Length: 262
Image 1 (cartoon, rainbow, N blue to C red):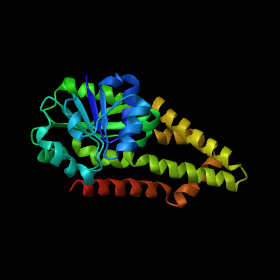
Image 2 (tube, rainbow, N blue to C red; image 1 turned 90 degrees about the vertical axis):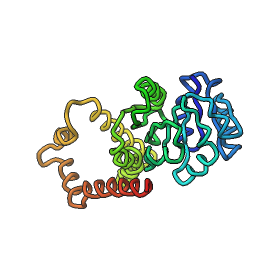
Image 3 (cartoon, helix red, strand yellow; image 1 turned 90 degrees about the horizontal axis):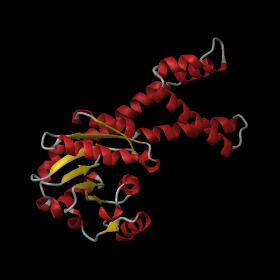
């Protein structure tokens, strides 16, 4: 199986680094308009760097790690030459399969939305596809992407929501960790220690949500003792609109994803 990737930036690079750890790197081709970046990635991972986008078209799976605004340029170059045997996997935020097919009518597409946590093999990735993708191909795509974390198949109508929750979500979580650390410093903890305590608390709490049969509200109630410290903090969060702010942030990101797809 040959795997190709157009673009080795933050997201494409993170996904392909994970892929290179599991699959035969001699069968993995990468290219980038920033030749220096692409060559550096190939040297780091052992993948094969090629000079042009057309040189990845003999691959079975072709990843498009290109920002939405540059997709048109890429398809102007390769759109007519993509073979029907290949499966093209696009990670461009907001760009629907229908629009991808309009650029390259002969090509078959899987749409994916990963997140930055792919850099440590803990991504949450969603994929969608149409009937022209065989089940076996979809399972192979899931297998490839599972090298970078958890993968689920979702209806394409949920992709804007996925973009907002798991695609943009890490930035919101990083802000929460930073705020927790700032509060710890305010209360007297050294900065480096504050980041460790805040980050490990989020990491462990997320693990409990994933592994427990209890929902987050029930887990929160477990920590809130009557007249205790935690319920005072929860009341302060509610007083300052914490949950409403998170809901608005995710909704704003979702709306922006819709706009990018137009």
